[in-house]
Length: 494
Image (cartoon, rainbow, N blue to C red):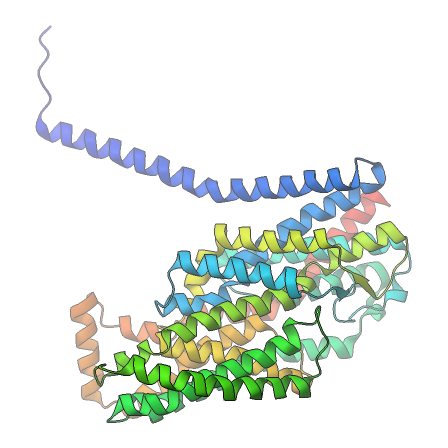
């Protein structure tokens, strides 16, 4: 039988099919690579804990808790850390790879070097320890709280919503506490303060970020001589950042090393403000020499300070929030070893190591999704706008600490991004005539083929509504999941 050669068209079709299959296979392998590494890390934590504690029946709960703690840390890295480096990535001051490296190093350093050595086992005093007197009940309540918080943060990351780690833990503790000791065990005035922070945190962050952006636009980028204005005000803005971060780290980031009152921290911040101003003033003058008198030139002056702000935010987050995240794990370890329920416990070093390394792995494996969400998909950022977001995050925490308000760093940072975006909308609508708007739309249409692209980049309403909804339901959702987990664990083990 005679065989006829296949046509070129058939060969091309076969080649395209083979290439498509190979690409699909590669994509499938990449899709399962990150979960596989995460699973390997969790297993490694379990095995290491078992070798440290020994394979005894009384240690099985601790081993299981360490595994859940590792799972929790992975989710914190995937979700919460994006708020610190996302704006810098969105402004193209950092690449995704650079942001991951900086965040992993400074988050771990903050957790291990300056993380709190003592943590409230009932998370912010929202449950009375005396109400859960049985150590076994308390252990399973904390176990359920830790697991529920991890599951909720995982779900939020999956839908692309940055949520508060602290609020997730609070919700988990409330749900387990109610299931274990009844509704009267909850400190409802404290819960009222935490609920108020849902509104206070993002509003404060957004307003402060918008005010800084307005100031920079009015005093620098919209001036006729932009370079001269930048030489006058950019050193002041960088000095404000240095002063705010030094005070922030003194109050929140160095608790393990030294106890510093807010008044002393403010004096430290003032000292760093003065020193930074006189150091950066000649540097900005030298950097701006020969620059064109354009807004783009002004924005470039904020790039290096923005990278420093992202690193400092990551360090402060690691120092301040990781201890809260591993608090239930520390509580389980202490209660299992001491056989008593107390309000505060010391955090074993291996628990902090689990938290620090878990956050780094979670950030590397799953962080880019939320980093892009915060930095690119909510609103369009440049170095100047992203700098306002970072500066707002530090200042808002200082103001909230001074007022004694419980706030969320996640809500502050994302609220600042919203504030920058909404300010741009209001500013453009107030200052742009129809002809300018039409020319802007026409420019975008020629550039991207979509006349609505620019408007979508101001603040994407779909992302805004998704994130707000996730914030509102975080505590009740984590509480419900925790109550269900506790009931299940109680029925199985007690």
